[in-house]
Length: 182
Image (cartoon, rainbow, N blue to C red; front, top):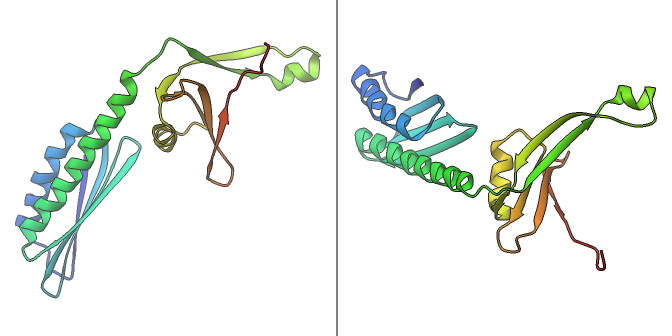
């Protein structure tokens, strides 16, 4: 874990730096891969400000606290990040526990086969577990992953839906409906 402590409008203090590192290290148990933690300590007039920016598991958490005592400010900011990490971890484990046997296959077709032959060939098959979740949870999953789409079962209606990342940065939703009489 990489912990960077920055002092603004105050002198660098090794005792304060060690206190911050001691508090931040306890956050490691809540995140599998903590990449970097930036802590900014500053003083503005009579306010002691602590800002924490934590990058872990494809997410970024921040907290900012102002108090009249720097140690209390550090404690409050660390506690806030700890609560955010717990909540984030609960959401991830909740998503993983709702797996379903229905799978989605992603098939890629070779462009070379389109040029050479009239019949395209399936050259790669991926299997995805389709999970029941709400649209908000699916949006969060898209934010956490670098995939361009996500197939899921809408928790309330139990219908298969596809959320995809649009070129403008927004998301699109495809709702699958079955034609009557089929």
